[in-house]
Image 1 (cartoon, rainbow, N blue to C red):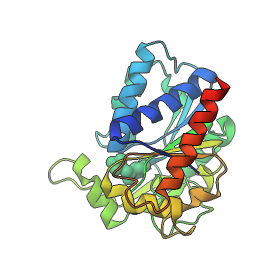
Image 2: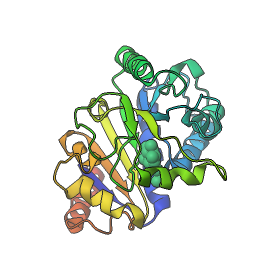
Image 3: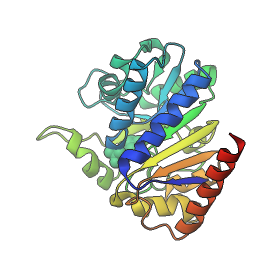
Image 4: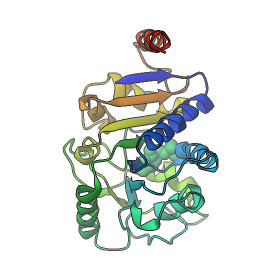
Length: 260
Ligand code: GLP
């Protein structure tokens, strides 16, 4: 894993935006894996700004990690609505090239359709991931098989509580979601994880330095050959080997400067 430490959340997000934009600029028909959550909102703002500066999404294809079971695509809290609101409606991507599991049909059917679309258009060139407080990626909650495929997963109480802020008064998040599996995520060519804030520090430590375990689903990323983790100081606060990550990045920067 490449661990990139930033002093601020803004800098970590800017790094993520630059990486995604560079992927698309180098390969205009890239397949992008997208994520939702509060962490990603400023990332999409950055991509919209890049689009205004000329970055085109017209030939890109996107696959989102997950969707709530029971919510139709036009439901205000669906992840389809989130993506339209935060990205799709503001860039030149055709709706037909954007894939999100369907929440309004039988979950097994939604999962099978999503895996079939991914098999037809994939693999994902760059998968963007956020991190749940409990170490989940997508909605792969603790106890998820590390080889899992897209399927329905029951959400933990803590995840439903964490996401309740996106729902209106009196509304609660659904009890399950259709999520890309961990095995599915690991088939991406490259993975970019963005985590900011001290509330994510424990999950970040589990992902980077913990044992590979279904207790912390993100730890499965240790098995992938091309993972970059962008962190702010809060999210990096519990890393034991933080000095080593800093030195490794410093060396990388020096080598890049020498090569330039
Ligand atoms: C949700 C999503 C995840 C996301 C996580 C963190 O549960 N399914 O993909 O990474 O929340 O969200 P936030 O960025 O709001 O902390």
